[in-house]
Length: 118
Length: 112
Image 1 (cartoon, rainbow over the protein chains, first blue to last red):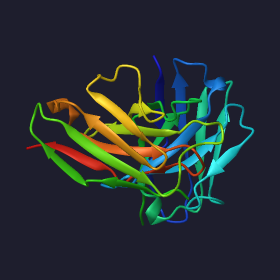
Image 2: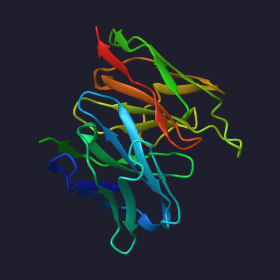
Image 3: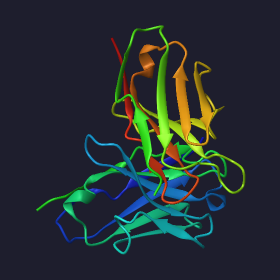
Image 4: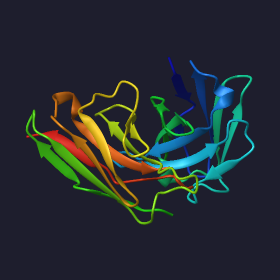
């Protein structure tokens, strides 16, 4: 069955960096686009970034453009999110989610918490 | 960006009774390929979101048939025919017709 396991969250100071990982299994990772979606404490969902199956195209929310970078290693079945210049408003649970050509966001990981605080 | 507006914010429902959630988009969600990429997600307390409905009305694998989706263009509805205790949570509509993907603010379904 499809499994997505995020890791790499933690506490970081404003202006700091963090790299999140999402290990995928149970499907052909190299055939599907992948998303990062975040959820601030007690708030709704916010889409962060998307990468196509082969890494050829990437899209970002305006709120993270220029600070976050999405990437993937299809040989390791792993998705990444490099987060730089972190701000307090980036504090959230970060989920990776699988894309599907018609059923977008069809599978989600359990999430990893990122806290930006001094 | 496409703005997704959900109503109501909260929906107290008696067990076994129906529930309905509306979602309106600020512009048509019909893609140039003819499809409408409107989905519904369920988030139970303490859990990640889960896909319920995709392309307006298609139930995802394992989703009970008491959940149904309808609508077109800019107006969409999620219905639960008979609410069960396990349906408690927050429901989100989301569009993937264009980037950035956007979500409604969520509707909390709770038992009266």
